[in-house]
Image 1 (cartoon, rainbow, N blue to C red):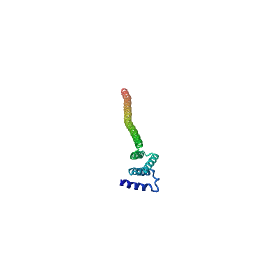
Image 2 (image 1 turned 90 degrees about the vertical axis):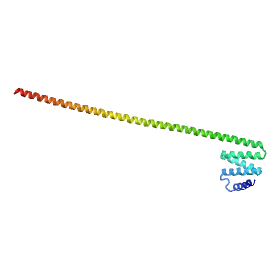
Image 3 (image 1 turned 135 degrees about the vertical axis):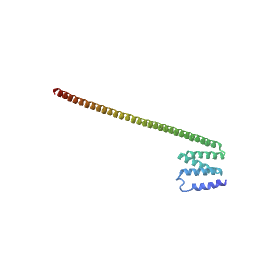
Image 4 (image 1 turned 30 degrees about the vertical axis):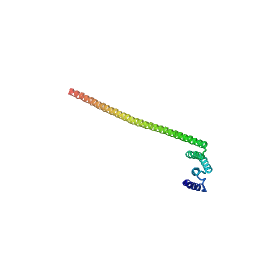
Length: 192
């Protein structure tokens, strides 16, 4: 009991500081602690006022974990006063809030998993497309090399055919010249 009275002393001092409204969250927390201490020390009037004020502040700040704590303290408060019907109401509120928080956590986790799955699926699709793109690039380079090799082959063939044609034509011309010279020589030999 002494420790609760000491806790009351400190929370009363903190609650009476001039800037107590500057931080509503801490103010509500102090009220909750003070309300719990007043309940234990059986100062029920002060305890109820502080716990309800803390609950109001936490609801206005939408601090669900603090609301849950306030509801639990109020249930304990009314149970200590022998008002079990009110204690049960606040306890049911705690259960509903816990269920709601739990459902939200499950929903958030589910959403996170779905987003992660979709993200991984997209990353896999990107990796697949990149692989296909690289494969297509390699195949395109290979086709270009084949075309270039074919072009060089055709050019080489044209050069060889042209060279053969030139050599054949040169040989033909030489044979024509030799034929003419042979005719001239034969004719000159006949004339002699």
